[in-house]
Amino acid sequence: MRHITATGLAVLCLAAPSPCLAQSSLNLHALQGLAPFARLLDTPEGKAALDANLKVTGDIQSGAARQPTLLPLAEQRLQALKDCFITDGNAAQLADGLGTRIGDAYQAKARYADHKTFTSLAPAVARLIGYTNTITKSDSNAGKYFFANGTTDGKKPVSEQATALLAKGGTVDVLGKAYGRPAGSPGSDAYGDPRPFQTLPALAAYRGEDYFGRPSHSLDWLRGPSQDLVNSPSFPSGHTTYGTTESMILAILVPARYQQMVVRAAEYGNDRIVVGAHYAVDVIGGRATSLHALAHLLANDPAYVGQIRVNPAVIDPDTADTGKTVSLSDYPAVVREARAEIDAFVRETCGADVAACAAQDTSRFKDAAANAAFIASTLTYGLPVVHQDRADGHDDVAATAPEAGHLITAAFPDLTLAEANRILTETLAPGGGFLDNGSEFGIYSRLDLYEAGGRAAKLAQAKRDGAAPSR
Image 1 (cartoon, one colour):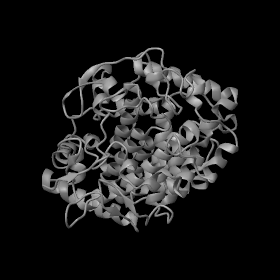
Image 2 (cartoon, one colour):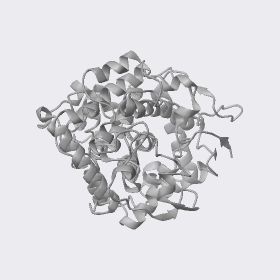
Image 3 (cartoon, one colour):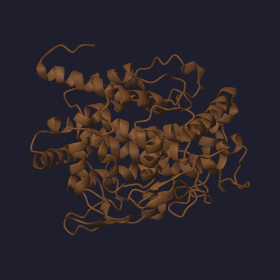
Image 4 (cartoon, helix red, strand yellow):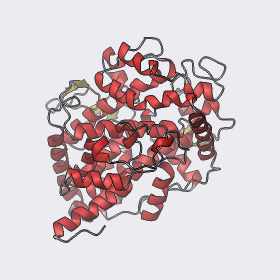
C-alpha cells in the first residue's frame, strides 16, 4: 500500500510557491464571473438578496428551515462536523456517494491515516485529482481576499486587471457592510466578509466526532484550534469548491453514480452552512467556481491544461513522493485512463461490472426522492431575483457556456456535446440569481446536474439500445 505525506491539506494554495497568491489569467476569468457579488449593495434587489441570504443561512444553521437534508438534523450536524476536514489528496470522504459496495472499497484503499498521511486509489486517479484541485482551488482562493478587501492575501494589492473589475462598480467587504460587521470591527474578520458564526444573532454549536472519530466540537472548526476561520474571508466557499470538484470527478469516473455524487457535492457544500462556516451565497459561488473550471478542463481548453502545478496530492510514480509538479497536456485522456483504473478496481474488489456494484447501496443516498428534494433546496436556496432582466430564465447553454456540456459527455460519451447542452438548457435552475447577469458564470450557477445527469443516463441507454429516447 502506497503512503503519501502531504502538508497544507486544508488550502492547496498554501503548498504552492508564492505566485499562487497573484491573480493569474484563469483567476481573473473566475473573478470576473464572481464580480456581480461585489455589486449586491448597489441595488434594492441586491440588498434584498443579502437580507435573504442571512436569514436562509441562519434558518438552515439553527434547523428552523426544516431543510430536507439526507439525514435527520442531529445526524446531519454530525456529518457536517466530519465534513470540516478536507481529503483533497484522494477524495476519500466523498467516496461514500459511490454506494455501499464501491464506496466502502474505495475508502478501504484510498484513505487518510491522519491529517498528513494518505493513500491513493491509482496513479491516473491521483494525477487527475491533484491537477484539477490546483486549478479550481486557485480560482476559489483568489476570490477570498479580493472580495474582502481588494488584496491577494489581506495586505498585498491585486493586479491592475483585478482592480479594474471593482472599478466597474461594486465594493469590497459586502458581507461585513451588509450585516453590520465591517472589516476590523469587534467580532468581525480583520480583512472583511465575516462568516456566519460572526454575524448570525445566534449560533447552534454542538459536540460530536471529527473525520477521524475523535471528540470534537463545531466551534473547534470555526474559532480553532482545529481550524481558525476568524480572519478568513467567507466568499466564495473553498470547501464547496473542493467538494464539488472531487465529487464531480468521481461522478464522471463512475457514471452509474453520477446523480448520487452530485448530491454528495451539494451535501458537502450545505454542511458548511450547517456548521456555521458559510452563507448560501458562498456555497453557490464555490459551486459555480468549481464547475466553470472543471468544464474548461474537460473541454481541453488550452488556457487550463498544460500548466505546471505543485500539489501535495500529486504522486511521483517512481518514488511515491509528493509535492511534485504535475502538468496534464491532454485532460480528457487522463480522465479516460482514470476511468479504466476505476473499472479495473471495481471488477477486482466487487467481482462484477461497475453498474451492478453501483446498485448495491444502503447509504443515505439510496432514496431518489430524498436526493431530488435535497438538491431542489440547494440549487438557489430560494434567494430572490437580483437581475430582473434574467428572471425569465430562457437561455441556451450552448450559446453562452458551450463547454458546460462536457460535464455530461465526459460521463456519458454516447451523447454529443449538442445533446448534452440541450439537456443542461432544459434543466437550468430559475434565472436572475445574484451571479446570473448573462455571463457564462451565471449559467454555471444555475446548472442542475442532478436532473441533467438523470436525463443523460436515460438518453445514453436509449442510444445504446437503439431505441428512440423518450422526452
